[in-house]
Image (cartoon, rainbow over all chains, first blue to last red; front, side, top):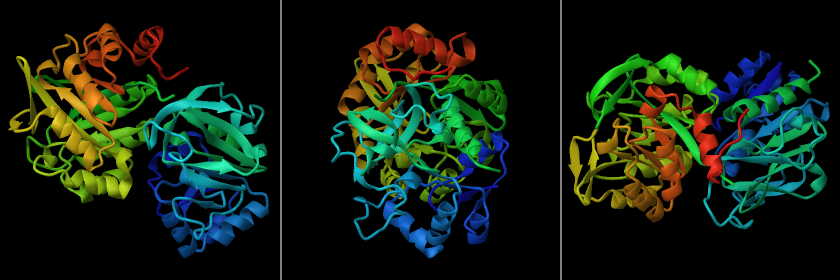
Length: 207
Length: 253
């Protein structure tokens, strides 16, 4: 069973529909015991980094998520959920601690050199820096996926970089450290390519 | 690089899919669910569904449209028509819409646009600007082309972007359903003057019309109704033609 964490940050209907199409058992939940007993965890999210951290603390989800990861349970962070895997974000300041599962900082893409449209919204290419990663299985190079974001992860160690996209500058689009994966784009909105990325995550579970 | 988008525009009244000419002369052209399934299987870039009866009948957006659409759409979904308050917009977004399209409720003030942008981000709100060519002049309209506004479409587009709209959907009323090409002049002017992506609608009758539009106006996307309803054109055939001309388009299977 996959736990899709519902912490009040974004609508989960599309993600739930995508998982239904994959015929995988899942539950949209904020219940610590359900999350703690799941075989895989998806951390979605849109909105403000600081608000998301507040909600995670208020629902006492941080220790549950960290325990699951420590036990080896696969975790997929989507969009803001990927940014929460990092240490902190410029959007909320260093006081709002991310989960610290993949070392890095979240920065405004304007400061990273994006001079055209912010937020970066629309279909853009996903280029795999690490095409042998299981996330990239049967996803052709340079396929388009759907992005909506104003902030992006800057990794401390490039070894965790899986994929990038180009919007004036190169932006981190996919990251992974062991069984913790993150994608900046929305697989549930990215048609067949997104479906395949979600399937690759589901296939990585041991259930 | 961000891709030029091809967006089917579905107009709905009750369970029916409708299509008009010049924002009038409506006729039934099908039903909603099969139309969504067809568009989703054709791998469109996004989908826009408008409850075209809502403003006319002075009622809110028909929520049953969203419940029919949301599970069938694996690309971003925009809904519009009759959205009058932040509460209505919030419910639609929380229930599965990625963006809402507003227009007639923002005639005297763009407050609703600001409210939606503040709560959900600018990417969640599109403002519809309806333009009608009258010789050398272009006028701006609301309420399905029945209320004339004392403002130029460019000015209204600028107000929308200033208020926080992430995109502006420009409809040319006199081209709607005519299938004789876009009003490239107004689309080009809007796209050059607004600091936000412009979605052009009204007049697409052939793949060539869409290519001509992108060749001559820096719009971000095109919304089409009749072209997909009454011709053999598909998102794929449009993308192929655009790619030949060097426009960035999405790669699909």
